[in-house]
Image (tube, rainbow, N blue to C red; front, side, top):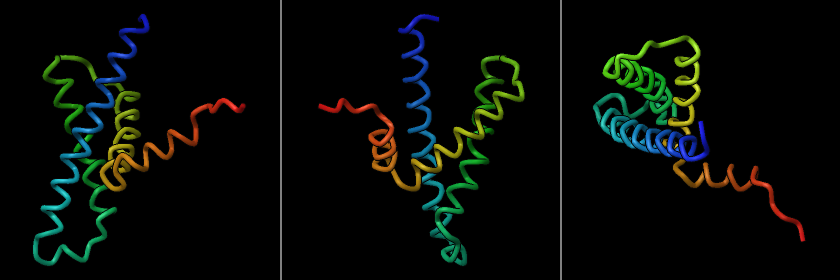
Length: 108
């Protein structure tokens, strides 16, 4: 796999995280507007939705592409679900903050 292919796959991953975070955010807001469910913590709703929707959509994608699903793919999907929840809860500002703390900074 060359660098261009790796960057393309990384772009697809970031796009998928963004789309899933948007979907999770919208569904969480709808659920929170139902009577009796407003008392639920929003972060808990977002985490549960992410842990349910990400594997379901991943399995649907793999079935549509007629690809086998292995245990390590599902494990990676669960880790990605936490990233989706993080983006849906705190938005891109939190991800940007983490990125800026971990990126090597040239000290002059």
